[in-house]
Image 1 (cartoon, rainbow, N blue to C red):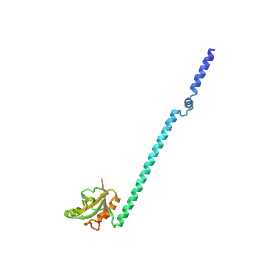
Image 2: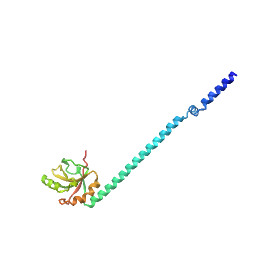
Image 3: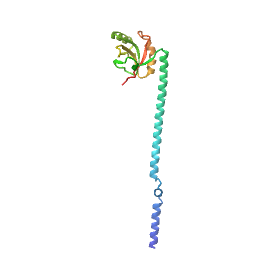
Image 4: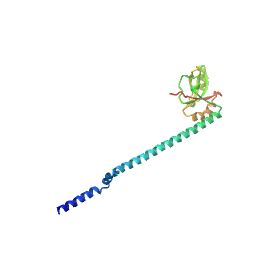
Amino acid sequence: MRRFIVYILLILSSAAVFSSCDHLRRLAGRPTSEDIAAIRERIVADSISRADSIAKVQAAIQAMKKAEEDMKEALAIIGEEGMYIKKLSETAGLRSGTIPARYAIVTGGYSQHSNTMIQINSFSSDLNASYITLGNGLEAVLVVPSDNLLEVAKKIPSVRAQRMCPKGIWVLENDMRE
């Protein structure tokens, strides 16, 4: 009878041990419930990360499309006004002064500082007139400095409406920014 009880206890204990799904999975070399849960969490985190990455890429694409549309519009305005864009590296260079933004409208170049100041003072304050000294010694009067070419282009009519604005104005692109 003792043997019978021992056999029954042995069978019951082994049944409890071997009936565990994770134990059988472990013996078979398969992932356990914990492993499956960890994999599921990793897959969910990866899909969230991918969704975030996709959203960021789509936002960047939209920003690039907007910038391209703005550039086309600005170039159309500048072309209609009979103006052109010239890079600072293509001019006589910069001797002194700083260009406060990537783009600005150049309204004149003067060899005498007094003439430069007369033109600067003739512009309304909302045009932010300033001057730089080019490498050839001329002082160039700049108005409407901005990092956005479309903003500069949209201000062209108000610059032309100023009483001392010459006909030959053009847009300077500061391609030598630090």
